[in-house]
Length: 330
Ligand code: SF4
Ligand code: FES
Image 1: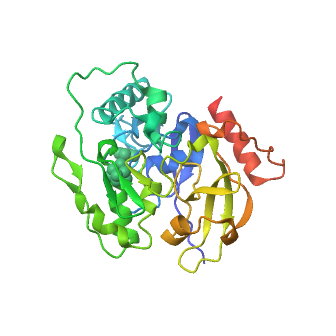
Image 2: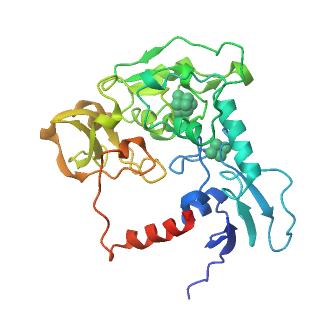
Image 3: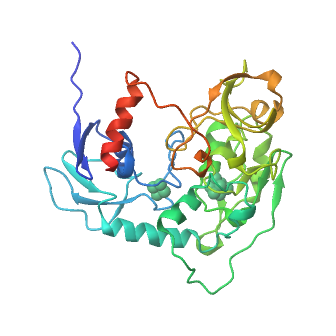
């Protein structure tokens, strides 16, 4: 006899969903989609124990649960707070959340250089998106930003610690995808920095995934640096018969030239399947790849300019989901 699984109801910005116990608020919000989803600069659903560091995902819990309906006294990080049955949460509908995320964005920029015009991550940087949505027009800081020397960590990856926001995702990649972890965040508070021992973690076959999970331009691909602004390239889905990883990638093309190879990402900008370094760095020739078609680019991204996609057919299951999301955003 199959046991019935208990589901909890949670209402986010007026939309109710049923989710399994132990689901976090952000995971429930992702089931709703649209403006109900808080931004996440350190949480990464594919990496265990991520989140809890950046506070960009703060939300207001206006009702704790059916059993105890009192609101939570402070905003809570949605990536680390599990839902209770009957909980009510405000994200886009909360003025408090909006002000808090504006403050967090300002905090993340305390030491982050405003070098988007020369940063390879421009156009794909989550901090850049956050600044467009919540940033202040002027900086209020008068003191100089903290600076570090640039490092090339091996032949594939470049590390610019000035841009690092200490989200810890690359440490989790090294921890969970490679055999050894030789780096981490050293020191505390204003002195915290991603450890120089990161250079020892790059020999592994899957170390290139650190570049994909880095939300800013702190870790960039040395084999693609400065070759093109990302919005001048054409992203296509491609696959190869790789025996180390699934070989499912996005090729970023300029004519027939492969400028860059990345893993495919989902709508939350998270890698769908991690790829190996050979696919990412060594297969920069079309002879290795079978092209499957244009890669989907989120409308939110600057890269979507000049990339047109045919509307989904009405019998496609994603069509209905998109319609529902469009209503949520209205
Ligand atoms: S280098 Fe990138 S991924 Fe690593 S902690 Fe810094 S911001 Fe996060
Ligand atoms: S995404 Fe929740 S604290 Fe960073």
